[in-house]
Image (cartoon, rainbow, N blue to C red):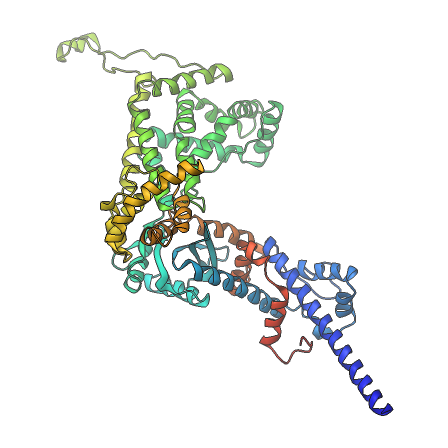
Length: 611
């Protein structure tokens, strides 16, 4: 009995020791995964240039692990007392754990999408630092009263034809376990390879998923409108060319420090001039706003550069000479009257913005611009505001130019009654109204109307579901929309009549106004059984995206991750890091014990015991 008791005691001790070892090993791997998750979510690098024992800087990952080891005996034991080839800090181990973390994130997205029943696809591409075309894939869906736009990673686009791009998108969806047949809309930019009606990505995708209507990104549309205005009208084109020259001059190292110092001396908030770009949305209006805020500092800075008699003095003199009334008029026009385009652009970039809201906002902007165009006082207001700027900043006042007349000895050869050759001075009030103010507004109104006119009957039905639309619950508009998504038309007609009375009663009882499509969906959620078809259509409408702004946000993350020092990073690692950085809310909820289990299941022959 004693021998048997000793035997059981030894076995128990062995079992306890093994359990402690497994527990310590699991804790160590969990800490490794946690540090990798932290660095990924924060968008900072993991690896160092030299991670050897003699290196003074082994990179963020190893240095953080060493920091943890000072306060955690288990980590210190594994790092300092364990086998040299069992520390699990090699870059291949990092790649495996990052892949597991991103896989769990995709699983969370997949589980959310199962409850939503439909989604929209948003795709855009860009070129990274290593000149590699990166395809960004985002899915949008509605769930529990909120709209989500989730990032599925970057895909290296080796080929840029429509068929290849579509295959990359489908590979990404399949990798995440998402059924493409549930897609109800697709949003891309206006590039022909994406938007082509016969051979573009959207056309090829609709051959497989017929209900996935194509929406041209409205942010890109608005940017094209602004670019057209800035290039089509000569005075405006000259103004923005001057604004760009001003930015380039004041960005020089020596001049820039003087420019900042002048702003501080004048007790102005330090404002940086903005560079113009064809790809940065509404940057023209932002650039004008920055120039207007710092205009006194610009004048002082140019004057001080001229006084130095340096090699830049002549260039500064040329720029200062052009800081005249015409420049100020354009600056005031684009800063004040056209700032509503910047508001429109900001709304389109919001994740909560849907197609119906964007269309309503587009029509609102067009109506406001039309009112300004037809107003008798709008131009006068801009003119008067511009006239006060020279007085405040010491800019030379406009000089009335002498009106040119025909020589007396030529009057007998001209069939006129002594009228001047030039009816108006090139710097007169009427000239600015006729050649700048009205053409800018006319061009904006025409371009906005043309580019934001929705000719698709299916998409027109979306506006009939917005509570603030004048066509709210218009059955004639809803019919093509309902037919496209296989809804019962008779039920839709009946529900449209009842839902208006229901909403009126709810607004009276709850003392709240239902003003957005998302609020409508939330209300219909409570009465889903009675308004099944309208609820389905409303969910689809709120899911259809207005722009591809979420893809643009992932490009900002890409620039932070793939820097000059990290340009050799593999695409799989880049994509995993980007997913964790963009979807940080999901990444921070990951159970690290699940990560350890998946890490253990991937390789059963590890030197470290995890089960």
